[in-house]
Length: 104
Image (cartoon, rainbow, N blue to C red):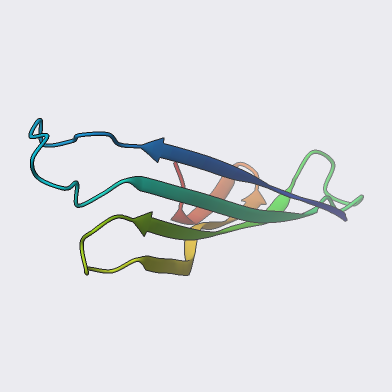
């Protein structure tokens, strides 16, 4: 049996200045911060009896956080998640195998 795991974070910052091309009006949005977190793990089972056959489970979760600043009284903070981004299972009974789930 093997267990792999990991994750990544994507951070994006946008700064807007005079977004509506009107100097007399204040901007409704000045800054936009976006943080995208992904965590994943994979569990694989390689039975010694079944040479070359591999069963596996993969799961990836995502969570997105958005922070806005500006003159607009709208939503300033938004947390979207955690959500199940990817999840699949592989059952290998060669010459037949089964794959089920959400996979890119």
